[in-house]
Amino acid sequence: MKKILRLFFVAALFIYTAGCSLAEDKNVWVNNLRSIFLNNSAIIYGINLRTFNAQDANKNGLIDFDENEESGTFLNAIDRLDELKNRGINTIHLLPITPVGTTKALGTAGSLYAASDFKSLNPQLGSDKTALSIEYQARKFITEAHKRGISVIVDLPSMGSYNLYMTRPELFVKDKSGQPVIPVDWTDTRLLDAGTESEINHNVFMEYKGFVDMVIGLGADGIRADVASCKPAKFWKELIDYSRKKDNQFLWLAEASDSWTKPVHEEAVYTPYDKLLEAGFDGFYGSFFNLKDWKNGKELTDHLLFIKSLYNKYPDRKTAIGSFSTHDELSPILINGEPFSEMIIWLNATMPINSYAIDGFPTGDNYIYFWANKKADKTFTDDEYYFAHRGKMDIFNFSRRPGGRSMNLSEQYDAANRFKLYMAPVLNNGDIHIFKTSSSSVFAYAISYSKQTVLVVGNLNSRVQQEVEFKLPKFDAESKMLMPLKLINVPHVEKNKFKTTLYPAEIQVYMIEDYEIKK
Image (tube, rainbow, N blue to C red; front, side, top):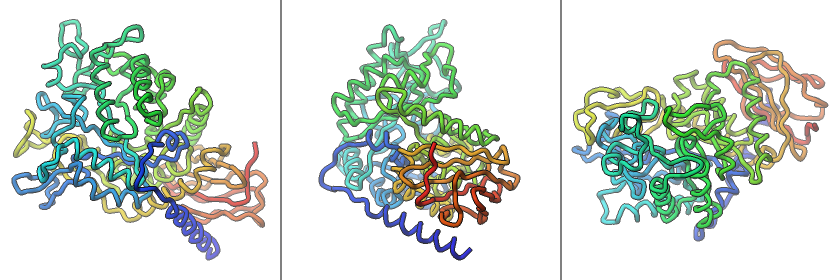
């Protein structure tokens, strides 16, 4: 046992040193985000600027402007950039920064995804403590991120607000009665008419083109396209080609999944994920958000192999993000407690995908707001209630900064990020090997490259402990060492048979030097 703990300490120290050796030129920024992303080395952190560094002095969960509290802004967000850098984060995903609708709105500040304009910045994100323009403030935030070696992706909303419909009705799809279409249950938005594969809507295209010009002008490094499937592939191809003429390293990430097969409304266009990738998107969400529903370990490993199969399917490489927990997903803490969050952290770190986490996730925020859906004391929209989705990050109100209190998760997250960067050559270039385990709810996979192997074993059963075993081909326990990075129980390895006990929702991670599994 002491030997294993000593190996764990050495491995952790080695990984930490490797992470600390990374250095950036603070004077010159050259966008290389596509290269980083396509090598599965992006560690992405999604933030809502309106709450990211909100100053809730009285700790009531809301920002009381009458008491001189300040919501999140481009400028005060700079204060947290060193924190992100120190956690190993190298890419920020900014949730929408466009102005929001205030009519037929959701929440007292309006939904971030109900865009009232695509060519300007949300005035809510500007600081009133300076005479600097909001555009200058935004550029300063992005510049400061770049100084720390952090790339910036900006979210492109898929819908328009009712306010935008009232001024630009020609941009929107109409139903048979001539009314604008409300997609799914997003009652604060209306469906944009992007056209068809044979003829795109020039008016909508020009709005999005203006958005591209704006974010590139601010110095951003890429775009995440919200609900990308609701626009034609031709629309995206022309837009992506346009952006690449300005910056050939400009990243395009599609919110799309291989498990989504229906349009958001019967009047809406539906473009499947593969057509989006063909149109020029560098990556997509995949279906990792379904982890909470998967009961059989094979469902996870099958999806891992599917993502890997996309690498060489297209002329340009394609990949995915670890979409296990986004602002659209229920807090993992509420789903299956802290062990489930640990599993997400280490799956992000040990799969050939780009890591993704939302603000508050690494510290275990459950996103429960005691004021949610109660009548508001004050509102900045026509909604008199603090609308919120239970257990999900608030994107509708001026509310507190996200954050939980789990030191364990925080430490696991930081260690996993360092490990991912250190093992990137193995994860990105190695062969994936799936092991047949003695329990259907347990998954086990290894990735091998250049005499190094990462071994991962996990229990999808969140209630029952599992005793599991499987074979490690040609593994000699006498001469090879399992260096544990994440485990509770010590495994038993005899000859080439691996045995371990997994607690509910537990994941175990090992690094094995001088050992490579050949196909």
